[in-house]
Length: 175
Image 1 (cartoon, rainbow, N blue to C red):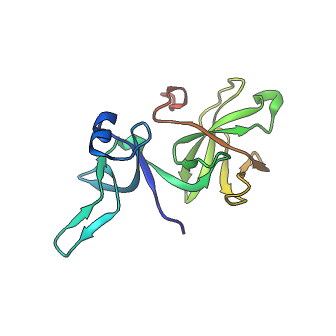
Image 2: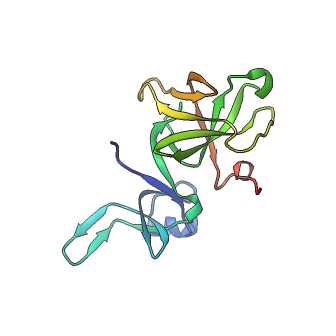
Image 3: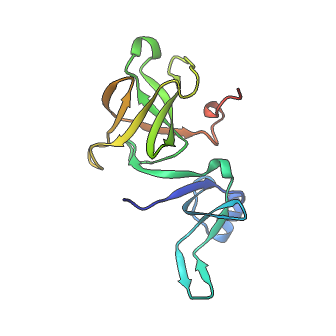
């Protein structure tokens, strides 16, 4: 089993993160996930610990709806794929959907799943109307992933194009 890694959108401003020297990508911080009083924090590694205290490299409060776990899989550009990322996935039905569809990465019943959001042609179905399993099939050298979707097993080059927290186009619609 690989190392568990998480990310979350900081409640601190980008300026504050920069000022105190915490590495981030546009306000996204990466590390371990802890909860304190029901509030999530992304924290760095343990710097020092004794029987009486623990000193962490850093700790950052994050928005609970932004927290996502690393899947252990990278996209075609070697970008890490996290829970709640939006992937651009080649379509298996170009006539109806166009060349690609946008799919959200979710974790269900111990499995990483990609669920349909909308197609290149803008076709919107109920979220999760179609879903498939996301698997790293070829390791870090082939840069392809297996997506099992609609009864077909496909070897695809997937690409992270956004996330469901920051990107208004991919946020779940209110029912």
